[in-house]
Amino acid sequence: AQTVTQSQPEMSVQEAETVTLSCTYDTSESDYYLFWYKQPPSRQMILVIRQEAYKQQNATENRFSVNFQKAAKSFSLKISDSQLGDAAMYFCAYRNSGGSNYKLTFGKGTLLTVNP
Amino acid sequence: GAGVSQTPSNKVTEKGKYVELRCDPISGHTALYWYRQSLGQGPEFLIYFQGTGAADDSGLPNDRFFAVRPEGSVSTLKIQRTERGDSAVYLCASSLKGGTGEAFFGQGTRLTVV
Image (cartoon, rainbow over all chains, first blue to last red; front, side, top):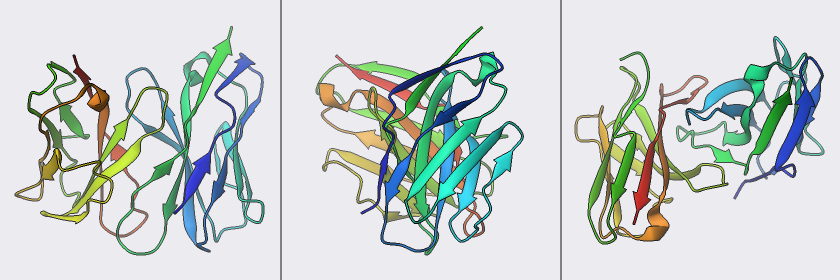
């Protein structure tokens, strides 16, 4: 079974600064997807960024980028120029790429606080 | 609708009662997932529907939990003889079959068993 570990229960960052959230995972699969989701107090999970394991290039979405280290099974999220609206719970998630069941396995989350 | 809709938003029930939680997925999404998120935890998979059938119910914790999707659209998660440990946020997600399969989530139902 796949597992996802987020070792930072809480992180804080000053507005306009950069912060990195850590995630490690365990799987025996060679092809899979990794995700970062944001969960504000509204509870809705919002997809921030996605990485396909077969792609060597790290995914980037505006101020959000990842550092994907496949051999180390590490998948960190970097948020640049942090904004007050970035404050939320962030979850790292794993999904197999094969078959049709796209169920996600989540970590326990990191609570990000952005200080003005 | 434009997104995944879950009702009710909040539900308080007494221990031992029966509850139903509803999920209305994005139109055209054949895959539907239920997750349970306990306080301070990430969401945990409960059940996956492809169309009308439950393709994977391995995450259901016990036989008090049951889910249906009779017409391949709206799904109902049913919990019998509720226990205080069932208190959690229940999230629903839907996705297109195949492709990237990106999951779109609803805002969840917060269930409190008193």
